[in-house]
Length: 222
Image 1 (tube, one colour):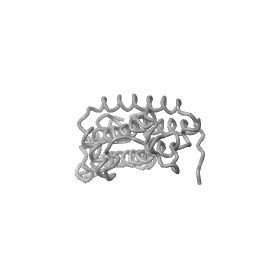
Image 2 (image 1 turned 30 degrees about the vertical axis):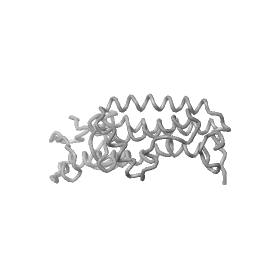
Image 3 (image 1 turned 180 degrees about the vertical axis):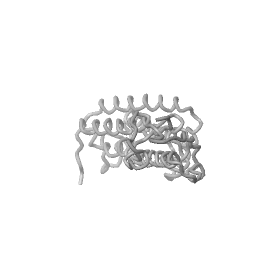
Image 4 (image 1 turned 90 degrees about the vertical axis):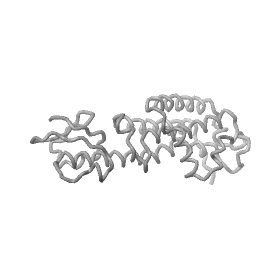
C-alpha cells in the first residue's frame, strides 16, 4: 500500500530525530567520542561520519533529481560501511562534527525546496523504479538511520556509566580489561563518589540504578 507523506510532517521527523540524536551526542565528552566500542570497534566519531556520508548522498540525489550516487551503493552493505569508515577514521573529531552540521543544514534546505508531489512520486527522479517512494528512500538515510544509531549510542552510554559506577563503588575487578576502556580512578571517600556532566549527583550512587541511564559520568570529589 502506497503511503502519502506530508512534506511538513516529513521535515519535522528529520529535524526532531536529529535533534534527539545530537542531544545525546552532547552527553559524551570528546574523549568518549573518540574511544572504540560504540559500535563494534567504531568510535562515536565514526558513527557521525557514517551518517553524514548518507546525508550527502541524499543531497546529491535531490540536486540531480535522479537515483544516482556513489558506486559504493553497488557494494554489499558490510563492505560499503567498511570503506566509508576507512575513509573517515583518521579525520579529527571537530572536523567531523563541523561537516556533520554543515551537511545536515544543507540537506534540510534541499528538502524544504522539494515539492510535496516530488516527495511522493518516483517520476520526479530519473532512474528511480516507479513503485518506489522518494520520501522512503530519504527516510532510510535520515531519520530512520538516526534512530538506528541512536540505540547504539544509548547502549554505549549505559555501558560507560555502568563501568564508571562499578569502578567508583570500589570493586576490585579490572574493568579496563572487561570493557577495554581506560577508566579513571575515583577518590576513596565516603558518600557519592562521582558527579554527572550535567551537575546531577544521585543521593546514593551505589543504589540509585536510575543513574545508569544517565550519560557522561565523570569522577569528581563530592
